[in-house]
Image (cartoon, rainbow, N blue to C red; front, side):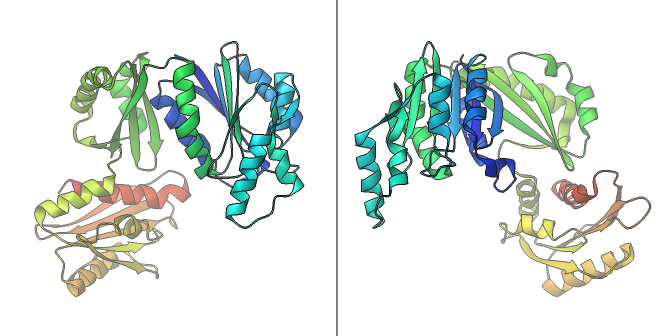
Length: 380
């Protein structure tokens, strides 16, 4: 299977002014095609540095996808940089210029001379018209190496990737296989304990198994290269079953299912409704439960400093006020020597206070606490 790298171009990315969501989208699309993505690199708007990076990257991969730097301004250097890296010059494409003018006319805009710059591409480049924007894309291909240069505007990049670049890559590299990933979501167990339990799977080559730790939860990623979805499922399933056997109810869901979805389904099964009461958790719990309005009735924020006993009293008061079956209270104590999370759960069956010590980064304490609160809720 071919190897790819992604290069996102733009000084604004390096300055932290925008998030690089393009690389995430491209990684997913390439993996779906069975193309392994080995590196993602961001680089500023400098012709020489971009050209050097392109030449270096070509020595170790088959496919390069770039985004950004195809606009009309002087600081859009991708065309010049790719011509330099490819050892050629820029060439004017009248058909692209006509397409740019037609697109501008849709917005009652007159083309300017800098717009004309966008119709210049490296000699031998395959032009890719852009029906959803003014920045044409292009493809360079020779000796088994392919570079696809896409606009940085996300909706334009996605459209051209799906409608032009993917069909080109499928044909160019005779892509038959695919890469499929299954993600198992865990909560209430640390990364080191998971590693101890499933370390034998982490040494496999196909499928591969890896861990990704988040605040209060850990994801287990099973990734397989296969020739079909059926084959991929047959390879993933035995590993998935065995990991479930070892970690049991620490696994709460797979793939796109969230912890809050599972917790709310538990309440639905009981035909219970919920209010939450939060102290120093930045209303994270309420915001995550907002989409579940059939179960989640209201969230209350306690702005004054409260003791654990007061958290219980306030949670019960709001529960009675809203006339619901359940109350979930959470208080994040970061202003004491040993930071801790207090969670209070009141249901028709029981009233329980939980205390969880916390020793991680202060900015993650609230998320960590909320995940543990939802874990308690899902186990009702």
